[in-house]
Each structure stands twice: as C-alpha cells, then as structure tokens.
Amino acid sequence: MTHESSLRPLCLAELGQDSAVAPLAPQLAQFAAVARLEHVTQAAQLLGMPQPTLSRAVARLEAELGLDLLARQGRTVRLTRAGRLLLGSVERALGELERGVEQARAETDPVTGRVAFGFLHTMGTDAVPALLRGFRAEHPQVRFQLVQDYVAAMLERLRAGELDLCLVAPLPDAPDLTACPLDEQRLYLAVPSDHRLAGRRRIRLAEVADEPFVTLERGYGLRLITDAFCAEAGFTPRIAFEGEEAETLRGLVAAGLGVALLPPGLVPRPGVVELEVTAPRTRRAIGLAWVTGRPLTPPVAAFRDFVRSRRGRLLDHD
Image 1: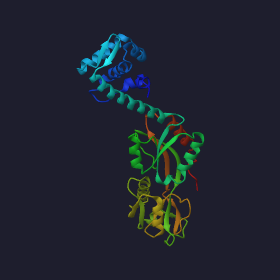
Image 2: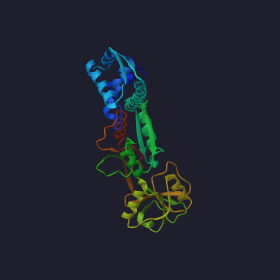
Image 3: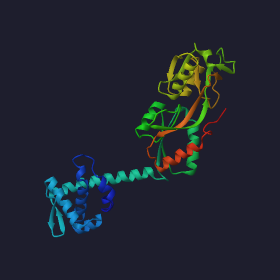
Image 4: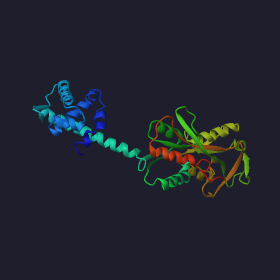
C-alpha cells in the first residue's frame, strides 16, 4: 500500500466508527499524511487543502487528545513518541479501510462482481443450473454465492442483506419485498405403486383426506402450499413424516409411508405413481424476490433482468 493510496479522500471521510473516534477521523488521517511526509506543505498538497488549514487541523487534534504528536522545525516535523504510537494505529485503520473499499468495489464490479442468490431445494436440480448456465454464457466472470434453504429462512436472509435475490414459491406478499412471477409448476399426488388409487390417472385431493401424508417441514414453501391445498379440499393432512428434501419424500412414498404432493420427478422413481389432481388445481407459482427499494449492484441487476427474461420458460412444462 503506497502512502497516497492510504490517504485518498474516500478513506479520510470514512475512517472510524466509534463515537469517540469518528469526529476525529479526518484530523487523524491528516495527521498521518503530515507524519508520513514529515512536511506540512507537501502533505497539504497531497491532500488538496491549504497548508494553514492542515496546520490548524493537526493542532486541534493535539489539543483534543491532550498530546504533543509532532515536534515542529519550521515546515518540517518530527514525530514524538506519542505521535509514533498513534501513527501506527491510524495506518492500520487506514489499511483496513482500504481493503474494505477494494472488496466493496470488487463485489459491485459489473464484470467480476458477486451475486448472492437463494433458491428452493426443489429448484436446485434443474431450473437453477439452467439459469446459471445461460447467464454465465453472457457474463462468464460474475461470481455467485448460492444458498439453498426453505422460504422463510431465505426471506429473512434477503431482508438482512445476506442475499440479493431469491427464487421462491409461494411468492411473498409483503410491502418490503418485490416479487416477480416467473412460472407455474404442476404438483402431482405421489402414491405407492401398490396404492388403491395407483391405477388411476386423475383424482380429487379430497379422495386422500384419510391417508397419511409425508411432507416437508413447516416453513418450507412446499409445505405451506400442501397445507393450503388440503384446506381448500376440506381437510387437514395427517402428517406421518416431515423432511427437508423432496426426493427423500418420494422415497418414503415408495416405501409405503404415505402420499405426498410433489413437483414432477426428473426421472421415474420405482415404486411411485404420480397422479394428476383435478380439484383443487394443484399448481404453485414460482417467482423471483428482492427487497423493495434497495439498490442493486450492476451484476445483481443484470442477473435479475436475465431471470425475468426467462418468464414462462423457467420450467419444463408437462
């Protein structure tokens, strides 16, 4: 780190967060410039300020701290012992700030920046890889931080600023979030191959009101949707097992532990039959969510616009 890079105006303006130190931040950085160069006029030229103004600023710092930091010899200066101790701390703070500024710039760079993207577990096998593949064909150097989680946790992380965008279902209905619908996915009733209804192609959901269900845990979007569809059909599902992965549920259905509302499997699962549900219309809306009014960095905005351009083509339709 060169002397000049550690004393740029951005660093001078932002040094220090502690309430006792922050008001002195500009004077501390100005002191560091004088101490480094051991010359008030040269430091003033570097900082782009009049020499008398700089001299007064350093004098005020000494007065506020109650310390003699510089021994003056005309326009040249020498550090006192207290000045050397303080300079070391100021330079470390400036160095940390410099690194933070560079990291922030790297995160927001349009070409090489980062996107923190959350998505449902059920989207991770097909839809999300296709999105990333398509986007990276146009933006090969953009970096991704990917998070798979259930809806409630992702929205919490979105609000906290840990995620930039989330692919979710159901779509959130909250004033602080913006949700863009992208596609609809049909949900099928998965039953064991030896189930009494396995020979049917279509059923009404009310026909399995007395059956045990295997579902995702509370808080998962698919669980919210399952509960809502069962309520619409006039019953509360009797839960035999709660899990975290849709494919685990499919395996439990094959083992005869219950039935489940699930998106279509990528490949047929032995021992499982998928039935179309005619009443209610078991489809889930999938969309992209972000925090309303929060500025998006160039790479995040580019990815959001790319995902929105895939509206109606996010999923393979059956």
